[in-house]
Image 1: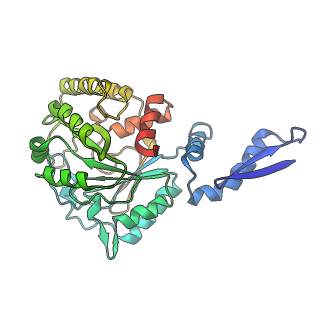
Image 2: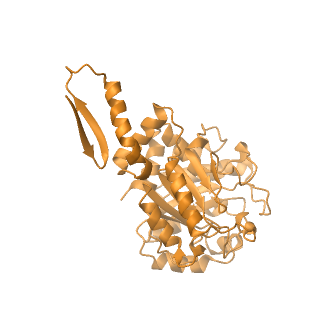
Image 3: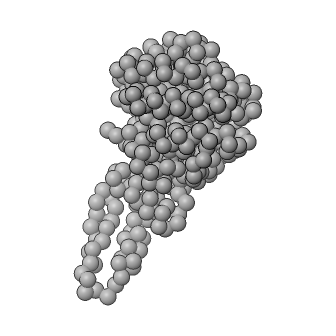
Length: 343
């Protein structure tokens, strides 16, 4: 006898071993029952992520896990390392509400489980009475986890699961790199009631030597849960050339590993940091999908549709970590859990 039961909207099946039906056939019956459910809804992560890995590993479906969604190129800062604010005058530099909702629906249909709103400065996004908070609330109904990356100059009250604040050093260094914004950011960090705020630091040739001071500062801030790092990537689109030399890249990664071992809250996994020294990690760029303010959706590398790809210069630790998770590397799985899934 074939029986179906339901857990958190997902159908499973059981059967008597006397039936003349294979387990593979039963799997496909359950799979067909789940198709419509999984098109529009997400499950709780203990069910959804195994389901995702099952489809990737055993059914050969190249589904993306993480979506990068730039809702606007507009920004209230002119950071030296960023080329995107230079696009703010383009005709399609700011997305409408209808386009944003349509893009979110498309990203979910294409398989993305998690989404990160970016910019420009995403908290500047408006369309009529709608603001980013409304997009985040909509996304929470359709994605497993929703995150926002902000420059931190506006109130940190967006209802995302995770909130990253870009901070590239303490006052002197950060103000040089990011438009004298340190004091405003500190004030907003101190005032926030968001429960999961992290610092994200882009390391470059002007700030890498001071990363230990930043990590200690993060540890002392009661409203912060830790920090992640990535490395400057040269787009060659008007931003300053702040690329690390190969020697400096190795030196800062060795420093990060020591800081992490000493107990400072650097949440990148040690294994992925080591792999970034020479970028000799297996990149599964199809685990990423990107959306831009004109509504264009691009599968694969973060740089696709945004600049020229140079894998040797890659600094995108989130892609390295996601690729490690896909390869079931325990450290990368743990890093992802701490950043996205931990309550």
